[in-house]
Image 1 (cartoon, rainbow, N blue to C red):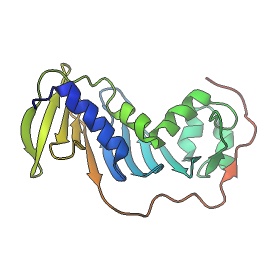
Image 2 (cartoon, rainbow, N blue to C red; image 1 turned 45 degrees about the vertical axis):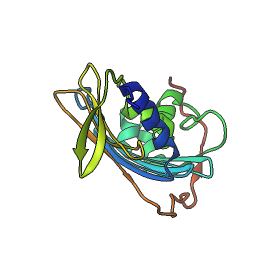
Image 3 (cartoon, rainbow, N blue to C red; image 1 turned 180 degrees about the vertical axis):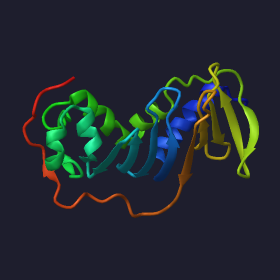
Length: 207
C-alpha cells in the first residue's frame, strides 16, 4: 500500500508515543532566538528533560505523575526576580496535582517548561509548524530504510520504514537544526529528586 506523507506522519507520532524508551536530542529553530537545546528521556509514563534556553538552564522530571522543575539563577533574573534566586535557584520544586504554577504564579511560563516533560506535548513543540505533504520519498539514514517527509516550508522528518518510529527531524532553512531520536529496551527510568521543595507562595502573579 502506498502511503501519503500525512499517513506516515500520523503513524510516526503514534509510534513515538508508544515506544517504551526514547531519548530525543536536538535544538529548536534558532532562527527564532533564543534557541532551545534539549535532551529528553521518556521511559513509559516517566520523563526527564534538560533544557538550555540562552543563559537559562531548566531541568524537568515527571515521575509517578508528579512534576518537578529546577532552574538556574538566570531564569529568576530574566523574570525580574533576582532576589529570589538565592532561595529557589538550583532547587527542585515539586508540583502537586492541578494547574502548575511556579511559586504559585508564572502559570504560562511554568506550563510551557513542564510541557517538555510530556511526551506528546514535547513532540508538538519539536514538530511545531510541520505539515507534511505529498508522497514520502525512500532514503537511507544511518543504514535504516526511511520514509522522508517534507513540508512546504522546508522541514523534513525521517521515519523508520519498519516500525514507523521517527529517526531524525530537520528544521526549516537556513538553520537546519536537527533532532535525533534513539530507542532502547532499558528499564531504568528517571528518578524523583531527593527532598524537593514544595511550592511557596508567589512573589507576584504573571501570565
